[in-house]
Length: 139
Image 1 (cartoon, rainbow, N blue to C red):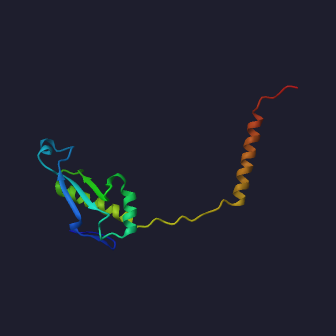
Image 2 (image 1 turned 30 degrees about the horizontal axis):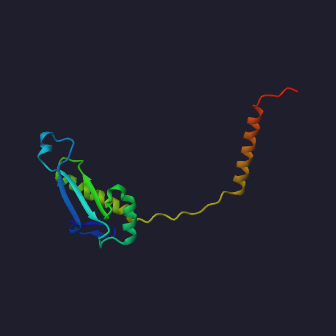
Image 3 (image 1 turned 180 degrees about the vertical axis):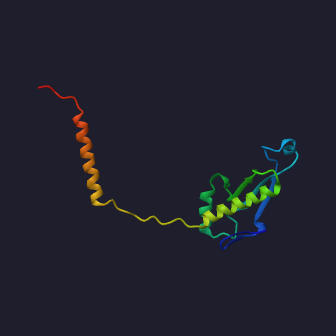
């Protein structure tokens, strides 16, 4: 089942799923069943992602990305393999979706002359107020 995000589609052969033992709830069963999922996706070698998305994904992923450019997602929230598998794929899709939307350009703004004047005037008033608190010198 391929992952589709907008016009980006990641085929199953690019994803490597490993099932590992999970910590947490499950009682004695947790020691026997490998219900956690470790999803690996090699971002750098992926032909499915455009280069700008790869770059943004590397920034967004942070510690989940290895030096080799492999994204590792561990899902162990649920008790069943299938639910954890879906969770890992959903988290990968959310990361890619975030990386696929380019950041908005910052529109430079200027502080208006009136705002500068108001700021200086307030500073002057504050200074006068504080100067009025000073001890009075006797002549």
